[in-house]
Length: 241
Image (cartoon, rainbow, N blue to C red; front, side, top):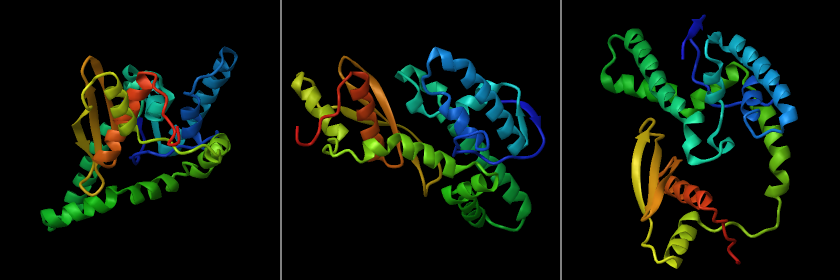
């Protein structure tokens, strides 16, 4: 990304749901829409992007980068499209944030040793601090919360039995086809030691690997299993059949 920079801006992770909460307006517009709504969505994205740029003091010369930064992978279809979500930029942003804060600490505390600098860095990049920064520029979590609650509440309150564990479902699906137990492999690990994020791949013979991410290896394995099940069109089974 490149552009006219007017002041340093923090890393952005949360979004909002209307023009006064610009990020979610952009992210929400990435969902599938009818042909008649596309032009309206495009205008809304452009308007929301302008609001966000004014708020953070940075102008994007490539608007698509801003839209990608605010697009969750669940809004995309197919494993090949995962590069169109925020995850690659988040990987870059995590390291850029760490580098910039490290440089600021190095200059601000010339007598501090490595241990003190590391502790200060961990405190400044932890999720609670990032949340405070997001609130300070009014990213509008409440608006996003209201949108999600409205769209998901009915499903949340459904009386259906909970879904079975994706790893178990995948293993049973594989065994039913004479395949070995799925193998899980850690692909990458990012983030600070106190709050890491894991990327895990699951593999089965004759099938392309599928990947998942999570704050623990187990969560990442579950996500990878779910990704493979979804790709192969296997619907999650309920606990009671």
